[in-house]
Length: 123
Ligand code: DGP
Image 1 (spheres, rainbow, N blue to C red):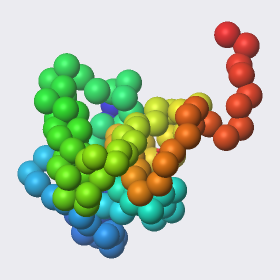
Image 2 (image 1 turned 120 degrees about the horizontal axis):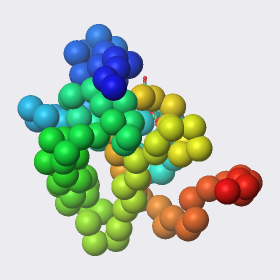
Image 3 (image 1 turned 90 degrees about the horizontal axis):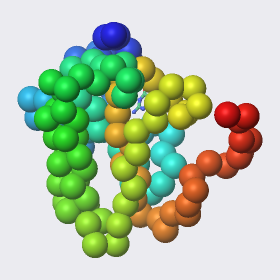
């Protein structure tokens, strides 16, 4: 399943974003609702809706997103202090934009687990 979302519009410069990194495969820009002092979204230029839609052929592309996170951590001084990289999937995972993206958060000491409203489901 492929989809076009507002992230395609950011890639195509149809809506503005604070872009911090770009290459042929990926784009990274600051989250419009930052949850940490440093909060960027790292996205593939190829629109893939959710983790469930990632194919085996996409594995290098998804791996590349992590290499971009590593590079940004080094450039922005978070490599040693630490940071969090997370990808949400579908409703229970907290996904709201259906174009896969890594959230990269840094600049604060984070807790674990990450959920604020823990309402266990009957499995
Ligand atoms: P998620 O809930 O995991 O799908 O994360 C989507 C994120 O996208 C959310 O943290 C807010 C961010 N976001 C939504 N719309 C925009 C936008 O127009 N610009 C930017 N920079 N970020 C956006």
